[in-house]
Image 1 (cartoon, helix red, strand yellow):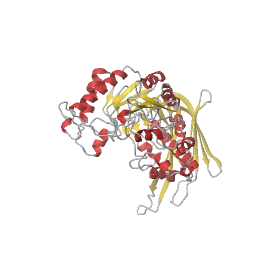
Image 2 (image 1 turned 135 degrees about the vertical axis):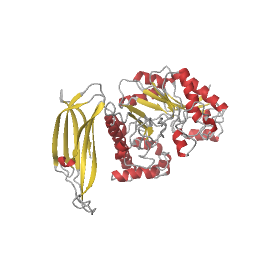
Image 3 (image 1 turned 120 degrees about the horizontal axis):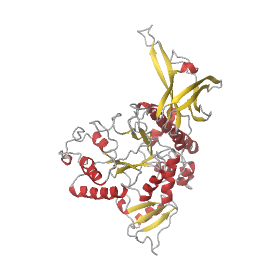
Image 4 (image 1 turned 90 degrees about the vertical axis):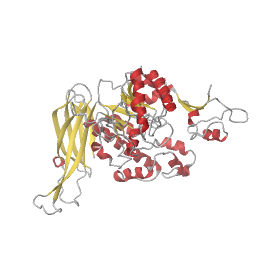
Length: 520
């Protein structure tokens, strides 16, 4: 039997075959994770170097901790979780708990962010591993999609009362093949084509081997990869399949306010980093207080994202007035993450607009959890402490929500067609509501604008008799912000009035406030 070292109450390290680690044959005891014991065991030659032989090293999570993570997901109004191809096939208790709690599981095959071979002995290993796990997991009612990639954070689908069973073949392998311009003809659906003779041989795994196993042993839907569009389209297509939308944070580093033009049919990845609770930061700093500042070696070692310093600062400086002491920086970065992710859900729920208008059918935020104390894209830290983003997302995934956005339009003055000096700038306010039940909901929409400089309420409008369509978003208002006190500008030097617009959905049956949102 493997030997273990306990880590807190919920973790244990396993050394395959056991072994001694010091002169008297006793295991080195540890109390924290990550731990110096791992380095000590490597030094003593009792476990493999983590970058050489990770297959001989295993970490176990307790049943209670699995349940705690999944309960947080449910309590956060989310209904799906993704197990990605860069992770593991989870223990039975994970899937049992998802069955019990009503969570849909998007299950990737264990292929992630790479180019895999397709020679015979490797294919045989893939076949055995896949068959074993398909047979182990196929009976779970929670199993929704089988594909290839991560435990990602959580998903939200706008679909109601419908199982979306499926398995995905890989994570981002098609996307990587596109980036390296490998031999990838999406129009080639000829069953006789031998993809093993191309420089993208893994396509044989995703389009031949895995679907054959799935069809033989299970009726769960199989999805070739994530992202994957199908219909001869590339993986960045916004109208078919799923998309990984990383042009906020990665890619072109768009402002998060542009989520509405960065949408897709199903957004299976997007995210923003956020610090964990300051108590978690204190945990990894320990007694070394001299390292408790943003750019310290210890702090940098607890963020594994490439270029995180520049990316965090870009989004901070564009949106916040902030300081550099760690206590205040932790708070403002958490607020930025909350604003970014809630904005995505708010704008994309609007795109579930009824039959024939299901432009965005769901979204998966990267990520729910951390496997060690760290700054990451998670919305709950390693110690199960929810970040503000967790609560912001929970609000946006409530049964009823109200959303707003503003769009500025610069229009040339037609009386001066030969000059760019004459124009008008008007801000359009757009308001919508969402309803995820199967029945229409009559509401009153109460809208007020406030002057941040202290003039109080500028304008108040009550819209009665609004009906939120079942399982859909409903457009409520679209018009000039001039109606709410914002003057049309005719010079760039004119400073716009600092208006906050607040909206509430009020149940017409009993006066209950169903939802609220303030647009700054």
